[in-house]
Length: 134
Image (cartoon, rainbow, N blue to C red):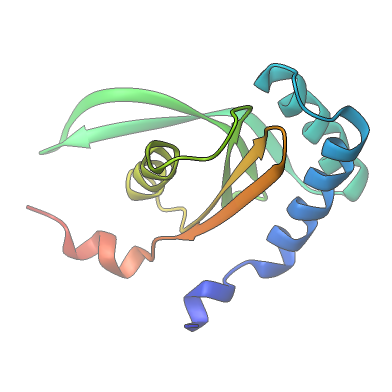
């Protein structure tokens, strides 16, 4: 694993702990918004700075072409995308990766509140973003 793979691991460890706290108390079957609000309570209890529905603007050749909202931004360095599906799928990972590409944030996590708890951590280094200008 590279150094980037451990980036913000102190924060992502807390996120995982909060995720399991919520999952173990609520289980699966609720809408994503219920899990989002519950995680916000857990993060606040842990002393983590967090913002729900964090706006992300997408640009193409210097022009705004879209606006999206990540579910939660933690400590201004980790984007969380929440799901309440049976399983995580490649489309979910692509969505998170695109959020990372569109921002200066390098670490993201998918948290799935499905029948079985699942999470994935993604890193997209800013050094690659700077080279993508075309």
